Amino acid sequence: MDLSLRTLDVRPILRAGGEPLGEIKSAVAKLESGQGLRLLASFKPTPLFAMMKSMGYGHSEREIDDGDWEVIFEPEASEASPAGGTATQGDTPGANRTGAGPWQAPSCSLDNRGLMPPEPLVTTLEALEDMSPGEVLEGLFDREPLLLYPELDTRGHLYRCEKIGPSEYRVLIRCGTPA
Picture 1 (cartoon, rainbow, N blue to C red):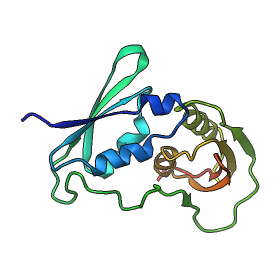
Picture 2 (cartoon, helix red, strand yellow; picture 1 turned 135 degrees about the horizontal axis):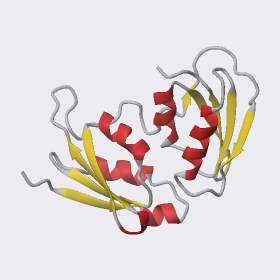
Picture 3 (cartoon, helix red, strand yellow; picture 1 turned 60 degrees about the vertical axis):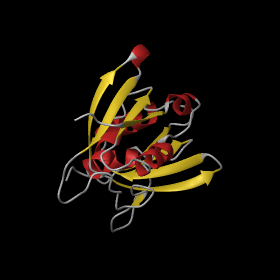
Picture 4 (cartoon, rainbow, N blue to C red; picture 1 turned 90 degrees about the vertical axis):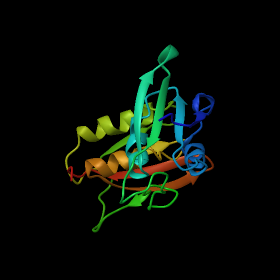
């Protein structure tokens, strides 16, 4: 069966320092039944794979020119979750999963402002690997790190995000243990 694909090139958004998740969600929402998405990105969008899986899409990826990536998201056949379904957590995949109990002061701070994706995500996850459960990391970002949240969920970390300026976000992450 030939898969009909809608193409979305987010490389210009990423190179301009923007966050393409809104464009990606909009493109997915416009897919017709049985249609897939061909995504072109300036890095391998690994964190997006879990989000798209939760929406009923499998993927295949390949590196293309100059380190850019092409990812094909195809609807998966599933009785429980029809292809093209929507995520159940709303527009933001959990920007405030804080858990119970008080939070201690951050023991580590990262300034991720000015970094191009995926550097803020990678830097944050690497810093968390060196931390003990319960410790808090403070991260500053110049865009909301929407692709970071599913990675934090997977690793058992809690987090909360606050907008502190026109294009500035502060994310506190309490180090947990994998679920």
